[in-house]
Image (cartoon, rainbow, N blue to C red; front, side, top):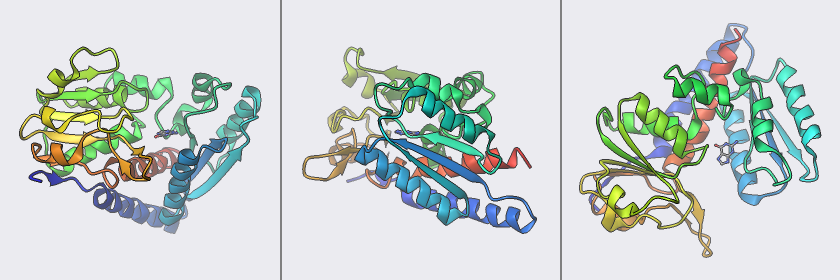
Length: 283
Ligand code: GUN
């Protein structure tokens, strides 16, 4: 392997420790602990693991956390009512509904019901729109976490040829907006893209978030590129792996994120960052 690793565990731990200090300082001056409510509908095991990590991070950092585990038989209006109650609850600064939701629920309507100033995931059209118009407030956790990883290696993306593979609402689209905001030249590839290999092979910065193990071949990577793998796939063997062929890509890249221990922990740290920001806005 010739690439250097971008260590998300380390960067996120530094960030969480700074947030923890800020929480201690606020509480010492009589301000309230930030509060995050996390809603999980149903029993998807992967979602349950993610929610568990978010709640644990809250506890470690000194936030109040409220975990709501709801049955997958809940209907739309019952879930909207839960969100309305949290919207009005003064101890709660951030509300997160873990996705994906069961199919009978209307995800867009649910995300739009979360008060925009409590939308710590940045999934509400208001906050996405603010980012699109270059006046971001709450920032999308995973893409913003990636931007901090790039900062940690002093990578200036202005004018850089960046290729984002994946165009989801959670990752690819907001990732492209964050890069644009910094002046990158951005190409977004998706399931209709012709000749993915050709696009990937000219990327100075490659960011992949699709959920298909090994989709991006190591041989496609431009020599010296920075490779950010947002994929998190569990193989039948139980091993966690990303969307990029790691060993082969690491032979060509100059920087690469591992899976696990790359982008994953950054998402949780940025959620904590957003929750603190939402609490501070009400001081
Ligand atoms: N499902 C996959 N990633 C995320 C995330 O960042 N936030 C929420 N709420 N659900 C997710």
